[in-house]
Structure formats: structure tokens, C-alpha cells
Image (cartoon, rainbow, N blue to C red; front, side, top):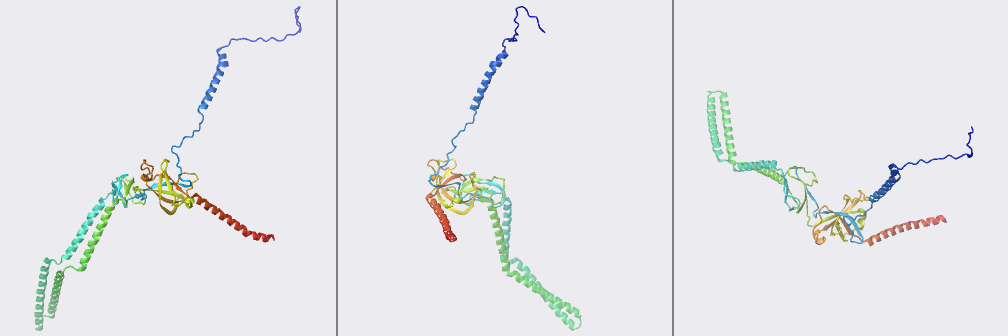
Length: 417
């Protein structure tokens, strides 16, 4: 549909006109366009600062104790255990019982025979009194036998003999008269027989009374006295055994040394199992160091070379070791150092060195080694001899290989021909 245009108007089409709406800026617009970017920048800066200050820093602190260093150019380095000169003696109880008194404490010096602790001995003391009474009874029996015959027992026996004699005389007279009457046929034969039996009984009674009197006058028999003396000896032996058992309840020291450890208290019951260390003793006037040498290093060890010991954590302390002995029985290793390459099935040769800390230690530091302490031991070795041995071994292997090759060459040559 055509619209009527006004006179003088442009008849060409016009483009649409866009009008921009204008409104005033508010607080929200300022927060969105200015505050949020500033906050984002601040948070980004804080994150960078936090990450930088909390980053992982690798520190290399100094060790608490400097590791020991070998004083020798070529050395064997092994760990050792300090022990007493007499070795560590674990004192136990020979009999079970209740401990009533501990007589020593750690650090005490003891001599041979010094009491260490005492067990309850009331039962044995009662048996000891019974044994003493038995000895007294046996001795009294010997005295009684040796004092026989008792003079008061002889007169009654003499009177008994006289009585038996009188009875025998009367019986013989009665028999004689009975036989005369029987010959005259006054009495019967039975009456004569009865008189004869009475006479025989009277004569036997007389013989018995005389024998009893002779036995009493002879005194005791020698063999009875010997049996009684043997009973005295047996009673005395039983009494001595009780005294020994009573003395064993007081455990004593068999060596001279120092009390290193006390593991028993009054009131505790102790048995008699082997290896129960109730009290540990040792002579610490001169210490020993037991060194475990790996079986692979035995050939490099030489007792004539010097050795030094350095306590763990005391790299500045060094002690001179003196060779004492080698225990030739190679044993499984028990003292482990914790190294990952260490095998528990390794066998070691134990070498004993002597050490006097007060004399061989650093001046002014005094005695610093204690029994049971671990030390690092450095033993000098002859590296040149070890290398010569290795070279000789390699030469032998090479010669053996060449000899085997020379033996095969003729067969190879003949085969080629």
C-alpha cells in the first residue's frame, strides 16, 4: 500500500535510527569493573608469596657426631663390644628360693667369696638342728657300747647263777632219791621220769644263767662298736651336707671384680635355670674388646698389626688396642650393624683385644669406656700383600686357562691335519 508523501519530501528510503540509552554508574558498576580485578591481583600476589615462603627447602645439617676415621692407610673396619677382662659373669642361684637380702649394689668392688645375696634358709636351719641331734645320739650309742659291762648289772646275774645252781643241786638230789625208791619198788617209773626231766631243766637253766653272766662280763662286741661308729660317721656326713646346702643359700662371688648389674630384689622368687643373670660381675681394671671379623676378611687379618678403637659418637677419642687372643671357633654373627647389605647368615671370627682406657685414652678425659658399649675398631692390614695375593691368584687362574688351551692345541692340530 502506497502512502501519500508530503510535498517536497525525499522519496529515497531511510536507514533505521538506533538510540543508546544512557544511565548513571552505580556502586555495583564500580565494584565489578575496579574492585574485583584489584582483589584478584591481591589474591594472586598472596598465593605467590605463600608458595614461595612455604616451599620445601633441602637442608644439609651437620651430623650430631663426626664419623670415625681410620688412622691407617689400609685398614679393616669392624664393630666391637667392650667387655670385662674376666668376661661378663652372670651369677645365678644354685637352688630355687625366695631372696631375703641383697648384699651388694651396682659399682661395688667384690673379692673372691664376697656374699652377693641370700635366700630364705629357715627350713634348712630346722633340718640342721635335727641333724645335730642325730649326731649326738649316734655318739652316745658308741660311748654306751664302749662303757660296757655296767658294774651294776653283774650282781643280779651272779645271783641268778647261784639260784640256778641251787635249783640244779635240789633237782639232782631228788632224782637220786627217786631212783633209790624205784629200786625198792616204792614209786612208779613215771615218778622217776618226772624227776629226771626236772633235773635236766635245772641243769639247762644253770647253763643259761652262767652264759648270761659271761656275756655281760665280756662287754660289747667289737662289731657292734664298729657299726655304732659308722652310724656316727653317717650322721656327721648328713650334718655336713645340710651345712653345705645352708651355705649355698648365700650366693658368693667366685671372682674378683666389680658389680656391673643387679637384677634381683628382696622378696623375689628365683629358680635355677641356666643363664639367668641375677647379678653380673666383671673385672674392669683392664677392659677387653671383642671384634667380629667377617669370614671373607679372615685372610687379611694379621694379629701383629696395630689396632685402634673409637667409641660410637666420640670420634675424637681413640684407644690403642693390644692383641690378646683369637677364638678359633667361627660363630654366626649376632651383633648386627643395620647395614642393608649385611646378611644374618654371616659367620665371624672373634678376636679379643685388650684396652686400658685410663692409660690408652686421650689425656685429661679419664675413663670413658663402659662394659657393653659398642666401638668402631680399625685394624691395620698389609694392602700390598693382599694385592700380591690377588695378583698371584689371577696369574694362577690365567696359567691354568693357558695350560688347558695348550692341552687342546695338539688335538686341534691333529684334527686339522
